[in-house]
Each structure stands twice: as structure tokens, then as C-alpha cells.
Length: 99
Image 1: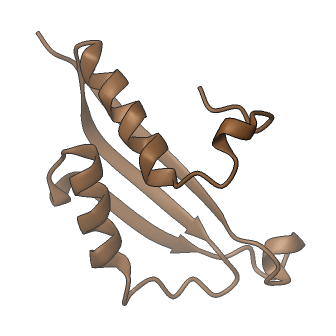
Image 2 (image 1 turned 90 degrees about the vertical axis):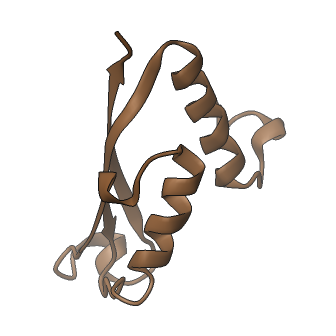
């Protein structure tokens, strides 16, 4: 949906893209069941920001805060993330079709 080759999406806020994805999910008769995120950094100190992130994601995705789980992970000093030159995020989102 959002090619990294397209200038149209260069520097666009991720919240705008996420809203479009959520609209597409709903328009096709599905709803978000739950969201699981892994934030991967060498120093994953998300404790102070976790509730704010959950609040924002819940609002953007139109789900309850209880349907969102966020964890911090490390790469044990391996690779570019371990050298603290990058971070990564893995997300799994379960969707269910309306009956």
C-alpha cells in the first residue's frame, strides 16, 4: 500500500498510514482483535512510555487498551541495533471478520 519508492509517502507521519490501514480493515468487514508489539533496541527502556504508546495506538486503531501488548527486547549487542545505531519494531495484528 505504501511503497518506499513513492515520493508521496516520503516523511509522512506513520499515524496517517495507520489510519488508512484501519479504515481498509473496517471497510472489508473485519475488526482488530488484538495487537502485539516488540520494540527492539539495545536498551529497551519503554516502561515510562508504554502506557502512552498503548493509549495512542488504542485511539488510532479504535480498540480497547486491553487488546494491546507492548514488550521491549534487546539484540544482546548484536548487529546495528546492538551498536545502538538503529531500532526495530515487530508487530502482529490479529483481525476477525464480522459475522
